[in-house]
Image 1 (cartoon, one colour):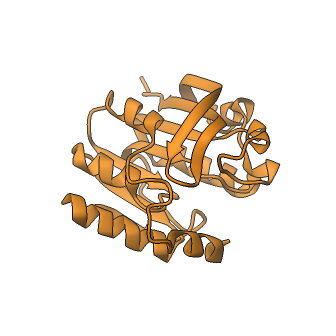
Image 2 (tube, one colour; image 1 turned 45 degrees about the horizontal axis):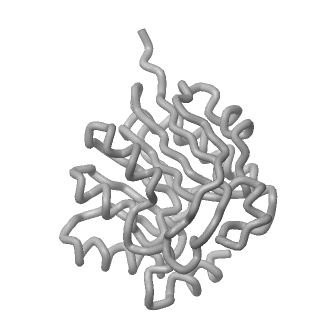
Image 3 (cartoon, rainbow, N blue to C red; image 1 turned 30 degrees about the horizontal axis):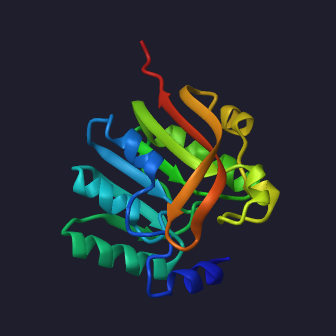
Length: 201
């Protein structure tokens, strides 16, 4: 799988475009800039956008090719991002140390997905926010991108269970039109979530 992503990200063009994900951008603007974590960040489009908006950005991906393109984009746009080449199993940060986590097409096998989502809850500060957009199983009927294995695709009910310790503010399964480079283009079906870690009284 790592070789697959290194091959894909080694292409000259930004395969998912250089602009941020629309859902991520829309919801990030409602938050006060702080520390943001972006797992499975690939070519860095969302990380660089957030840094331009004043966020202190940490990101990771297991693809060295993705890292190189992300750092090149950051240099081109004149921002600094803290990007590590590692995987979701090995990445860690301090509990209650980030203000927001954005999971944008961060697809994982079930056991690893649950493990990462539990860690995300632990990493979030009280009052912190998760922004998530991922392909739904209905995406298998579309040709606009995403994993071809159903277990790697996310339903609203699944995310409700994974993030049941958070206050879910938005959770939708929707048809959308994708315009994110060559590999996310055309009609698609996604699951979207915004959730907040509760502040203890």
